[in-house]
Image (cartoon, one colour):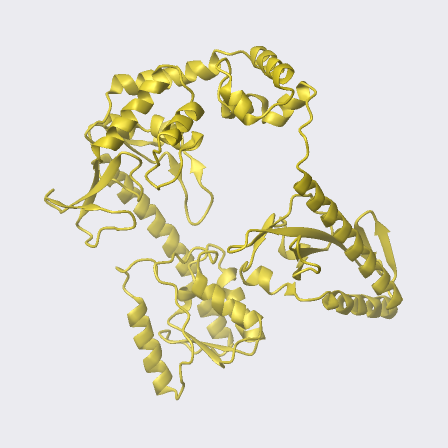
Length: 493
């Protein structure tokens, strides 16, 4: 479920499933639930992910999965996705029963047709609900009611009832509990208000966002999230009209689990006077003009020449050195002008020194890649396959190709594996997950091109059923594939 206000709460689903199990002589041995989760994507569904990981990993000690109805898999916009998860259960020998549906999930043509319709209806329901929600949010925003969670530094969320009577200030993580209640923004603590005013005044005085962030950090000031100030956090404050009393909604949009997209100014919803202003409109406009002039008044050639002087004086270049130069814009603005700092460095003939730890890690990754590729090439040839090699790509029996990419782990608690190199275009790519300080790979992700039109750039400990079902503790699966291709070649030859 996504909210507590839905018709089928987790409790109602549990009661219905328990009653069905009792009526059919079943015993519920495990429960997978997703409370407060959207059904549009599986990435943020730990309950469903846990179920599919147990199914794919052979840890399903149960015989049947009981689901309230077809839509509980999720209201995926690709209706085949829900069917895929049910198929994984069926392939593992686990039956799926729909408790509240009027049809029997027995694999009959009737059941298949009804499930297809139900999945399409679930997807269409999400599309319709999304459209209605957007209209409702825009209407409420036009009336001055805050839509969203974080109010921003120097502001707080005030809960009011349907008559406009004050209820309470909402703390971080809290939300309204009654549909008729509304949320408005009000100025926060006086100290934060003064900090906001100071920030705008410093921009008008000619200071860069980075310099302002550094001064705030030196003073011990933190953001409303309790973190250090950065260029981006200062940018959020200076460009927000909330501080001069105007509530703006719809600058960005994220529909149906898609990516965040910037929206044209003409589509924004504006409510002037919805918030008690912390600064004047004149100060806000002056800050915007000062920042624009600050980044635009220095020509591209002047930036190159001033950066060259830094290089001649310091013998090196860095973000900190660029930010410290009073005659240059922020390093962010410089990077936008040149498409990154590296192209600017290249123009000046400056080569950044390599981090010795990074260089050692890359060298070890290359060594492992050579070792794994060479081992598999020799192993499959000894097994009777015909293997040809083109740089890093192996062609097996003239039927299929594969390549290996080593991804190294970053972090200890929430480990991620990053791939920093281009992936070869092969039928199968084996991502070898490693830690630099460990003597052997952790595991192997054997991913077929047919399922991954775009190769992932990073991996987590758990990546969802599509990737996790392709994860193996050894390379034995490649030997199985090679045996199949050898038989195919012998049969056809």
